Image (cartoon, helix red, strand yellow):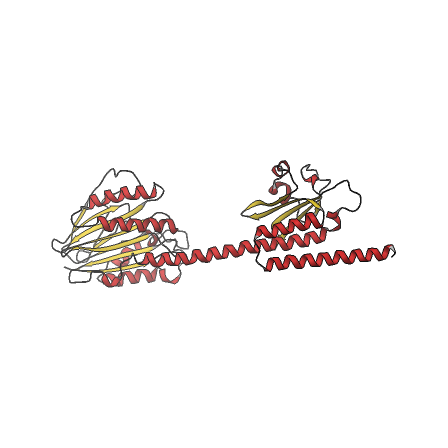
Length: 413
């Protein structure tokens, strides 16, 4: 057989090998092999079948990580800075045997792997026997190695994205469950006081799946009710967990026998123990006696509720109290607020998500609009509905960036 015939047979064998290799890798990917198993097969093909002796693969996943190292010393690996040595200078296949960087000169080629112009990985390859005569395998099979590298890297990236999507879906389900559990902490409107002495109306709108707001009502005895509204600093799951713990503690402490001062003192200690000073909770807590018509309250760093006397048409902010829960190890000063309610009146309690909305000019809206919509003879329920409608709370108002909770109480004469 002449030389040209042998060359044709060799080319056919090589083509067959490459096609079979790609088929094997494709089957491995379809079989859902792990990242480690895919890299093991990739390394075996390059080292044993293509005689490639040095292989490094750096892949991006939030940071640049070395996912495969074969035939390279730790000293070489330690001297390579992906951001500086690779990302800035190698956007296409590069021959680096004459690179000004001595560390890269131990390799023959750098193969960058991009997806939609975003770098996914860098593959560095070099020969086993650099003194061997003939065409270097990294040159002879370069395009095949590039194709194989792209297939492997994209497959590994798809594995990562799939795992990430599963984790996100699992987290979404957990958030939905947490949201349902948290909504159970908020008292249903059907059980709120509505009698010939007071009318209670509420509104609750978490900004995301789980919120950091909380309010509650308790019948302490036949003649006394207790209620509170609270807001934890920060957002997300950690804030929701802290508030759930706070609710359990508050319900255990909130009784007729225990004074508001003692309740607040104990709550502060428990929030400090749970949050370790990283978060705090603002709180407005009160007791109201049907018999004496006296409201006793403590404002612990919370937005001051607005009290409106419907007969005198006077507005008053309830500020007496102390610092927020978890701000300090011990509460330095404390002032119990008291208010005699012997005329028709309304009390409007809220969290800061309602009044920290920013208008088109970047100005925080504040409480002026609440005062305007509260200072009238309309029922508290109508007042709340008007405020929610005007603020477009349920219509996706983009200026809302926090949870919104409202307690409205109307006191009858």
